[in-house]
Length: 252
Image 1: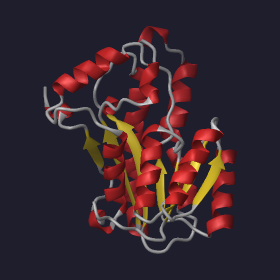
Image 2: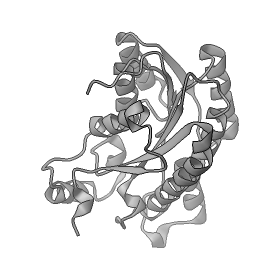
Image 3: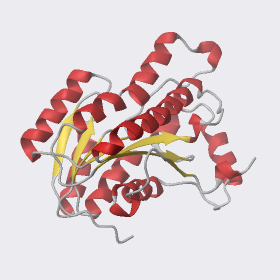
Image 4: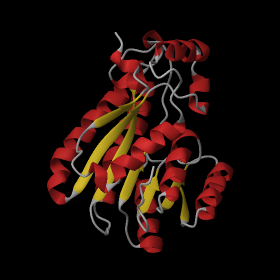
C-alpha cells in the first residue's frame, strides 16, 4: 500500500500467530523493527522473527503474559536495553472464556477482562515512558462483539467493549502529550482462535452470507488497517475504533 515507517520500533503482543503475526509482518514490510511478544509457544514466535528479519528489519523475542504486570515491566526493560525506545505499540494478545452466560463464573469473567482489556493500561503506561523518535502510536485490536451480542461471547464481548472505552479515555488524556491511541475492530476472521467456538462453522457461514464485500476478513486486512493507523496519514485519527468487517455491521 506504499506506507513506509523505516527505522520505527514496535511491540506487537500476541504476535506468534493469526492476526498478531500478520500485523508484525506488515509492520516489517513497512521498515519497522518489531518486538514479538508470545507466552506459550516459542517455535511459532521464532518463525515470525525469521520472517521479519528476512525483510531486512530487526526482530526481538519477548516472552511474557500481558496480564501480569511484572512480565510487562520485564518486557519493556528489555526493549529499552536492546533498542533504547519505542514508537509503536499494538495490543493484540487476547484470550477468554467462550461459554453461555449460565455457565460463566466470576473467575471466567475476571480472567477474560484482565487479558483483553485491563492489560492495555500497564502496556500503555510503560510505552509512554520509553523514548521515541517523533509521535507515539498505540493500537488495540478489538472485535464486533464489543457492540453486538454473539452466542457464547458474553465475557469476551464485554471485555472488548471495555477495551474500546479505555482506548477513548487514553486518547483523550494522552493526545496532548503526542500519543495517538486507537482501536481496530475486526469482523469474523478464520483464525486458530475461532476453532474454540462450538458454533464455528455456523459463525463463518453466517458471516460470509451477511458480508457485502463477498468474503470473510483476513488477518492481512486487519494488519493493513493497523499499519495505516501507525502512519502520519492517520495523524488526526484519535480515540477511534476503525471497523474492518467488509460491511457486515452496516446491515440490520
